[in-house]
Image (cartoon, rainbow, N blue to C red):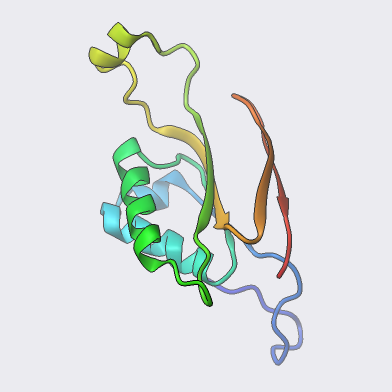
Length: 133
């Protein structure tokens, strides 16, 4: 991921870097490429926002890989919040069995667990508090 730089390159950027990743960029990537790009950004302390989110399988794999990389002194894990693409999908048990629940996420926010805290989430808003450690 490109790094934000100050006018004076000798200093690290002050603040939190947010990487907004388009669906177009993610479309050509394999699952592990997506996961590696996300986790590399989060390892650097960045907040990663995916325009089109991840499939449920990709999100599960992201969590598995994250759990394997957690280290008490170096990496505390991730905080992830997603809301669905459409509220018009059939969320009943029969609808899920028939495949009505296989939508991709509309938007996903991912960040270091020690820097991001979800304050509120509903179908139209994700509100998070981000701190710089």
